[in-house]
Structure formats: structure tokens, C-alpha cells
Image 1 (spheres, helix red, strand yellow):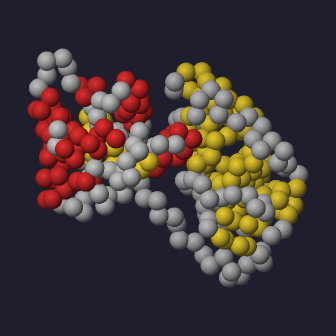
Image 2 (image 1 turned 90 degrees about the vertical axis):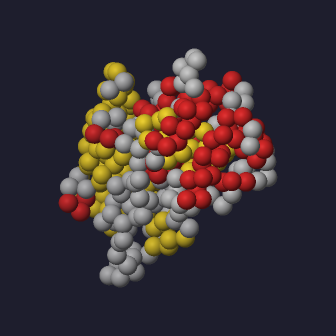
Image 3 (image 1 turned 180 degrees about the horizontal axis):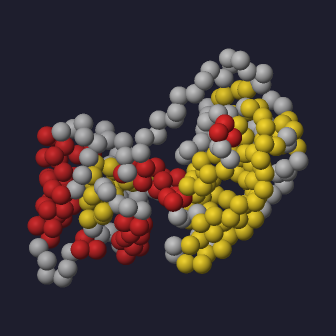
Length: 297
């Protein structure tokens, strides 16, 4: 379980609440977050809390707002104190990827304070991209590699014409819906780490899901080769994959919408979300109609 210290500036109540929700969500997803709003009691020794928290953590998240950058560069307040400790560790081992800068409420051209320049960061400025950015952060904290599996040469022994440009798979023909397997499935999408398996052998699809509110779920490309999203007008009878966008790791799926999956063997499956039902925080059910196509991309 990763232990992560959160360094931030108490800018406004809105900013503090945003950081609180991020830290709380990380804890719900298996990250042991060291955070003053969780642990620093009234009358506690804040410098000691910072020193112990930073020394006991294996990662540090720095929320880089305008105020945080100004305080870090000036070496003032608690941010300045944490900066000195973090800088000392970075000088000792600059290759450890110990610090993750996160950009929020930042209009500065530099984006990060001087002591964090050169480090790769995540920008949470666009709330529309929150889900994908949070997912990338969570994968990194849990040390899950983004390295895709090494597949076969797509032009060797292939009868299909495939273009792969910038991660978008374009199949230059309509695929008749000759099926290997089809039906309906109902599963608890927050159990078993969000994994549900359809099919077997070459037609196995190890799908990944997570909660996205009362009327939608997230679908992830982890465990498969690629996924694409299609709206309710997408049909099961004749499947045309041309120009569908397979470039993203995560898709938001609502009832009557479709996700098209390509597994690691190049097989294709179409799932249509029928409905969602939340019985409790531990039992949230998705019902999907699925069709595994007897084709190879």
C-alpha cells in the first residue's frame, strides 16, 4: 500500500475542499494518504507533523496553485518548511520520482515552483479531464505499468486492412456480426477490483470497470488492447469500426450506450449498457448485453 504525503497551500475553502476530496478518494482506492486535514489535531506540532509525514512517505503530492508556488519560491509558511525537506531529499536522490506535482488553480507560466522544475506533472485544471487524470495518478501511485503488451506484427499473415495512426484503429471495412458468443451479463462492478471476464481462450475479454455516479460507469482499456465508445445509434447487426476512436484508456458509459473492446488476440466484443443498480457501497450492479464477434482486427 503506497504511503503518500500531500503538500498544499490553504488558499481558499474551495481549494482546501478540492484537495480534501482528492485525498479522501485516494484513501478509498488503497492509498494511505498523510494529510493535515485527516490527522493534524488542534494543538498539534505542525512542523513535527510535516517532518514525520514526509520522512514516512514513499511518494509526495505537491498541489501547485499560484499561492503554493509563491510561498515555495519565497520559502515562507508551512509550504516553505516542506520545500526545504523535499529539496533535501531531491538533492540526495533526484532519480527516485518521489514527488508528483499536480497543477490546480494555477495561472503562473512556470506551472510549478522553482524547486520542482523539470519534474513531470499532472494538470487537474480541466474538470472535464478529472477522471482520466485521476486514473493516471492512481495507476502511478500503485506502481502499475502503462507499458502495453507486445503484440504481433499486424501486417504479417493478416487479411484485414488496418491503419494505426496516433493510437486510432481504423478498420477499412464493415464487420458482419458473425458471433462467437453473445448474451446478457449482470455483475458487481466494484467487486473483484472492477474486473469482469467475458468469453474464454482467444475470445476472452478481461474488462475493467469502476463507479462514475448514479447514472454512469467508467470502462477501462486495462486488460485488453483498446476500447472505443459509441452512442445509442450504434447497432449490433452490422458493426462498422471505421473511424471509431480507440486512443483513450477510459470511457464513460451510460445506459443504451456501447463500448467496443479489442482484446489482446485482436478479437472484437461489443457491450451495451442496459442499466445500473446500486444496492449498497459494496454492491453496485451493471447489466450489459454483449456480443463477441468472430472476426480479427
